[in-house]
Image 1 (cartoon, rainbow, N blue to C red):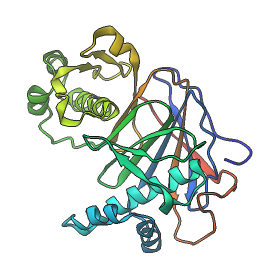
Image 2: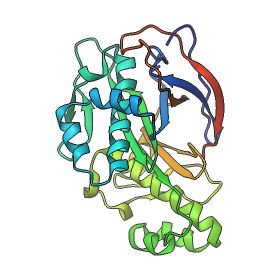
Image 3: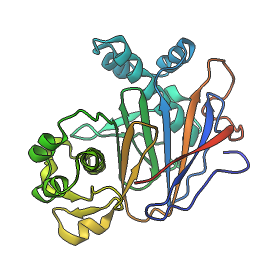
Image 4: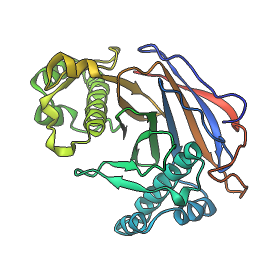
Length: 290
């Protein structure tokens, strides 16, 4: 990472400090402790030169997946999100982004093909409209979900159909404005947990409960496997940018959360995956954890 890495303790419900790093210059090689969760966010509307650079780092499978999108802006968002994923992972592994290799579990969750001696990174990526959010940890399963908040959405109908009876009842007990926040609390936390488990649609949304009432700490309340499974997981609710809700589910034991917002600079500099440049932090903002 350079000489210092930004870090903050992460007690339940505390704000998470976000620093700004400029792509492609920084940060250098982030130091990820065994009890740390690293978060990365970025807007997916970069200058054309940045999109081209990120596209060139993708493998053939990723390029084919991008080509299947009908709308140009959807293709761009996919390319930028997955190119930045390679950029960030390359920083941890000290390899060029195009050398990153993935393997995929039966239900599609990706993991890294790691050389001997490489840090045992686990990661998960989510993006919604023009915002991406990436979570990186060591030796822990992790899932992340980010959603653009749409106040006119039929949150009551969707929650009645897909949430557990207890969650749907908690929603109905709230006023209209609070219901919107509660819905996105619940939806992102449930999606993050499903992604962390790597079970996809085989794990029904109504088969477990999460907290969702505004102001309550994010938590897994009920799951198959009982209290042991509940204790296995920590949930973190986030507001990574105005108008967005997000959540992370990670296996228990995390003591610090560190966040970076990647600003996508149009200029070209050296700073490949093996670089030793210092953290290029240019400012800090706050994203309140929920």
